Length: 460
Image (cartoon, rainbow, N blue to C red; front, side, top):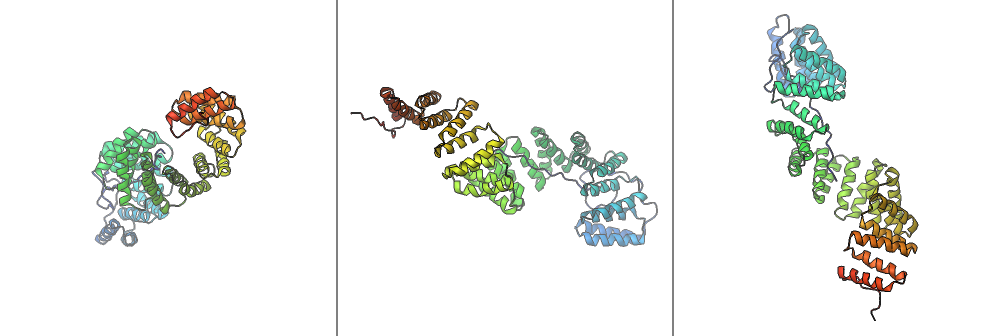
């Protein structure tokens, strides 16, 4: 099973403020110029309350910080920095509407403050108001074109609007301004990965990972890029580090399973899938992948459960239907096998695996005419497959069409001369046509290849 592409999450980093009233430090980012800040002097008590609020904010004590900022604003209602910081604290609490209101009040006092526009953009983005967020971020970079975090935030919101080329341009600007902007590197890399540009994506994600090796989101996206570039072993190691740090990450366990499965490490893959499903039960693709891993270990009964669960979640999934068909066929429940294969073929009528699976179960049910028709259809798609020719011969033999069976078996041994059973069955077909001499030669060849196949002709 091929590794599936990750669902990649963009990181909207907090904007870096223009003055010491920041709630998180920027990484080597030029500060936006202080334009449009508070117009009147701030009383010392208000400054102290604002500073204490920032200390609580950096410690993620959001409720306490909100109270301190509000106290500062009681002393000085037109304190733009405190309004901005209150907006950040409310945003961190998920109170985005209130946060936006505070940013709007701050912008009335400081309309040319790039940081406040950027922070408002972040809050709007959290609300899913991407067009308005784009407008706020555009204003921020218009005021200060070297504001790396605003370019990154603008790019992320443009991406939400489907404007991928513009988004990539903004991420590149953010990186040009600050080559160590991990969030922009991460966002650019994941976007390029989604755009099927894995080599370039890996370059940026490798840089992001080198700068911030312990960041789980960066490591996860780096792992995805490694996998997409065929560096499967490194990708597996990277995902193992992700789940070691974040054992409740269902998606990471699933992607680790996909990679292990692609390396035919099916027992380990199954364990990863099970850990993913223990965290999140209703994952149709992971359930299907678990069933596939069990099949490849010969655990047919164990495969049945997850495949049926997957089908219940996604009733028209072609691959699940085919896998279930093979499981029921192996368990000799050919009626159920036929039902699943027929549903699969309703979705993909010319799929050879589904056609041959269906024909095999029909053959087991002595529905030889239907089996013959399906083998012939499969043969028309894959004419040089000796196994299809062999099975078609068997269906024809069961129907009593011995001449046609001979032709099909002859073609099978032409395509694969060491197919012992084809030689043997060719001999049996020739016997039915009373060509004993030629039949004996085929039995002898079959026994030469596989000594356990004894000739049914009495040598005496």
